[in-house]
Image (cartoon, rainbow, N blue to C red; front, side, top):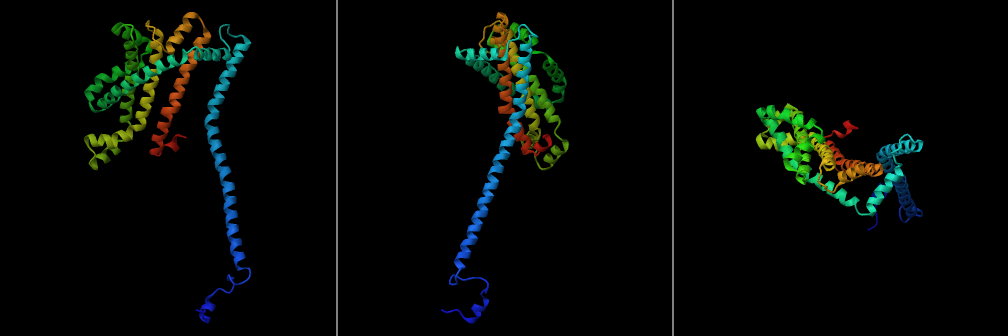
Length: 311
């Protein structure tokens, strides 16, 4: 049906039709310009996103690498200047580590120590967290046990080893007892402090909305105190790891572990083996902190909108 004069008058006279010469070319030209613009945007955005990601990774790894390089430089300088007759060079300590790896003693020692600390830490969490929550709910119990837990927490692990050895003998049970005595008071005291720091207004708001008793603890108290719980668990792991190394070093039972490597180096006077054991202890501490506690803490703080405040 042919177009009427009215329809022809509504058509934009400046818009070319497909029948007119150059109309299809202009449409193709506009599409090509859009594709070119999107391609340029992609070229501009991809490198910028990659560069931003590279800068973030560099900002995270540069400080620890710089610190390690500074320590190694100072260590090598002290060795080269001869300020200590017994201090080996960093390369000699690295040789001890590679030698222990080659003769098959490094991984078993590392595995035994990590397994003991994981089992002791799990038992400490199972005891310390409920104990800390119980202390916040029972004032007489907190009055009696609070000072005792604080006193035991302040004791060095070396003072706990003789108590555990006399009570349980030179056995692996004594080592686990030292880990428990080192970690449980720290976790319980940390959990109690975390609950104490929950704003009372938040608890009253929860009760007014029907969150009382166990529901209040699950839905209000524990989520509000979760950052403090993470800090308590981190401190408990640190105390337990230190106590384990002390117990493996001091107990007379020849238990395989990093502490036993440290004691072997001490008895034989091999400073390289002693420092290699110290490097392993530090590496485990840094690895657990970087792989477990720091990500969990960032996630908890991010969920509560506190991550920006800690930067």
